[in-house]
Image (cartoon, rainbow, N blue to C red; front, side):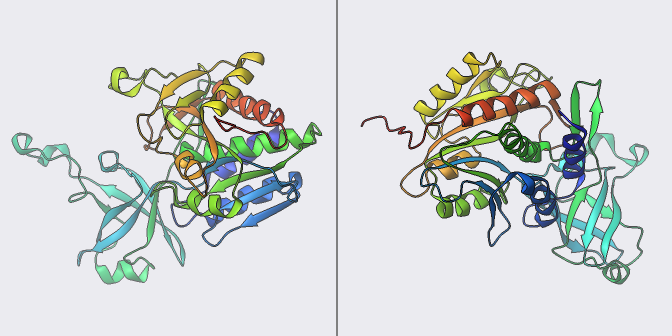
Length: 357
């Protein structure tokens, strides 16, 4: 975080709720921050925002992150006023008990908690773990009618009530680093290009896409609209150094050792080689990871859109993904920004990434 302005934006952006399908509040914060550094912007039907430099250029380069976070939907309200939920994205039922939540109603935020029976009264021999069938939210109401009067109904969206913090001066910890930390990084790349007065010979499209957590939907839509020639995607990847991770199946990735560059069918090898050369030239540390079929990120949506887009994925290592204590290294954060920036500014106009020419 180079400046107070950057730091203030990071905390404001990360602490704002942006559940899948309800990202508009966070998107407004993001757009307000990047507006001084762009020539134009796109706001599409479902809320993806794109900051554009050189919008009239024929050759188009994308850098992209996704803006949405996992959350819950109200699915059932009992006559006693307890609320049962379903997932909106890959929310983890096992971490829910005893968590505080924000319920986003038309009347404003209603506070609630995921309740759980006390250890004293649970039958140890038949102990049942948290599941979607038994986790529930208590809003301090005694009836369904009282809950509904609060503005809560089936389909109301719910997020955990957790905010960003620093840990040991080296890490950032909070909910929704997946992947609004990416939105922060691409905004900083854009700002760095503008402040360093770099004149790009192509159009740069800085994409903050919606609805990744439920199937890369925002990226699918905007990729077809922009039709870029090159796309560099940033997302998070698992730190596998923490306990209970299997390095054999999940790879060997650690926070604090630099961004992770991905290999896989959707990743274009010529773009991948270009990124590695940039990292080596600029002495930016990096790690390698492999994806067997799809990357599971917006890279796939861009790579296979239209006639095909030369795409690559640069990930920041993350501990405890899809929890309220997602954790990344501040050093990795800056190095990922630097790697994307250095890669973008050396791309040539109409650079041809085809394997056979």
